Image (tube, rainbow, N blue to C red):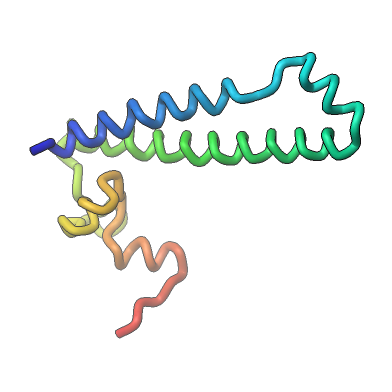
Length: 116
């Protein structure tokens, strides 16, 4: 059975690879020159570039969260809500191993009210 640390390190490697691949997806200058000759090609190129930036940005934020979870693990803070200091449930950590808040604090931060 994998430990939490192993899972987080595997996730980190996966994200680093995905970020690297995402950054390598941009077109070379020759392709860009050809696409800008056509207004639809130019729009498509812009859309594709925006999508790549968005996906890479989300992966980078997730990588930051994984790195923070690994640092918390090393420091003995892993699994403790950063807002209230209570223990984060095992189910939540299993679903989201880099969770920084318990469900109540995360919901509060997002302005979401849970049904009673």
